[in-house]
Length: 322
Ligand SMILES: [Zn+2]
Image (tube, rainbow, N blue to C red; front, side):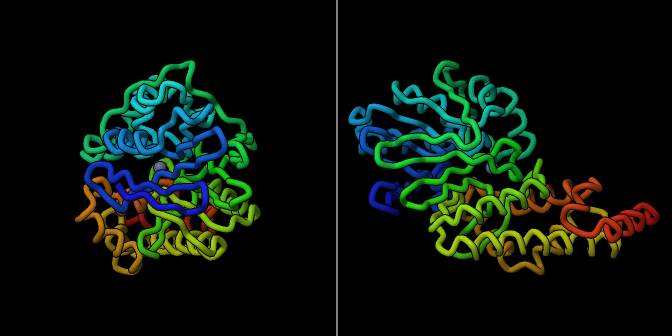
């Protein structure tokens, strides 16, 4: 288990879930009397969380929070087990996530459909006790004893996504709201049911916050937040144009579009190569292209990210060639 100080009172922890180091970062904030664990990970991170708990000695803290950016099982799947491990802890989540933490059966079904075998690797979540799951209002501030954590709704990657700004450190915990980041290569996490219009609005909001650093779930801490956010936005626009061009040229299968983007985007190609050595990451690059394609199929989606006229002509073309 790799543990690193990213500021005086914030740790970055690689829980290496599903034998996949370097893929998912969990962040631990130690305030005066309050402890917060941001995105404790999937069920398969439980053993590492047990070791982390021994290291942190949570009985020193009056308040213990498991704070979720969103409920995708790679971020939240361990929550039922973690609340058992930490009997004083409460889980904090967007109001739309509450019922899925208490009864994760639908979440699990959706995960099996979207992730396939990878869902099995991450593990089936168990339910959290209702009285220990707390919903977060937009703008809510959590007092962590000398530190403040503010919740900001940032839909796009998921409709219930929340990012968190830590002051005075100026660290933004962005979950999956901006991009994935592996060794300097980035790409937006446009998995189903991605909403491009909401995503762009969320990026604008995050830019206005002027964070000093951004801590992302997959993976690590990024300096130069403005550059990072702009690169994510540019990449989304570039993928959109690749998809439209592919359709104009007659591609009708997502596989063809995926291969086309992979051959033109060295950053996505880099992430694709990582899939071979990261079991929990398998199929991830295909899912982002399929998710964006799915969003663009809808006219409003196409309008939000590209010119609607161009999209219509591409769509008419594909319909004529069927
Ligand atoms: Zn996610």
